[in-house]
Length: 247
Image (cartoon, rainbow, N blue to C red; front, side, top):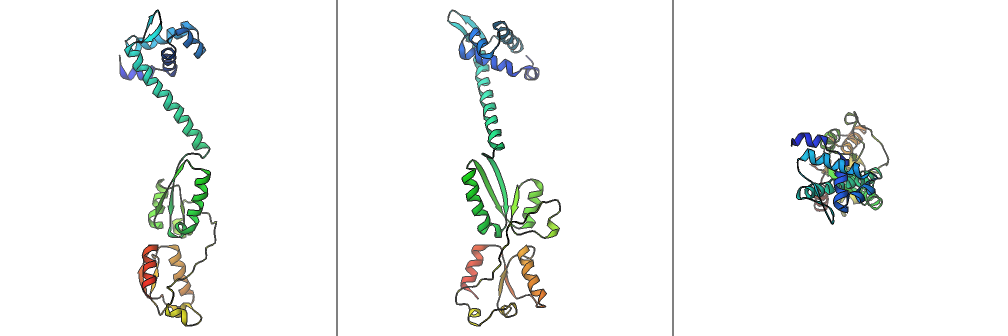
């Protein structure tokens, strides 16, 4: 038997017929279940036996039963059809959005509220879909998106230099606020302006982030130098702690 040749010549009909005979222990019942004639079933079995060069079934007074070789083929045929049934189910579920996997790149802005709320609704409607979140900046996430490692990115609209080859959709107008700890001296000084806030150290996002560019431009539009930047960070936890413990 030539292994490569056998794999190329064996057909699903061969495996289906072996399985039907093995399950029913009868050529006639197997033929009926397959919608074939008994001679056709016998011919298919002989074809496979000729390819494998071993007997697959033996006839006795109690019916047609698998030989040791026939049981091996029948067991593997059972696995093949079980895998095909599973593949069909997975394709159907994926087509209907009931299973699969979605990998989302997320920036801090998206991770804070928009994406978690969307995921709660999505997982309620599609509980079989696994979602993976990868947090980072556009410098890290955009190459992953181009390489196919991400399905999409949720975050502030990227700068135009990042948008080449991408489809960008705006679906939310964000409100940006400056925050400080309760009791900060700036809160007791009357109306707050960007010029007045320059007297205090700032925590800002990294220079390549969209929000950082918006803040920088707000100062430049007023003809003001940028404030003293004590720290550049995208860590919500670290930023919160620094805000609570310093001015």
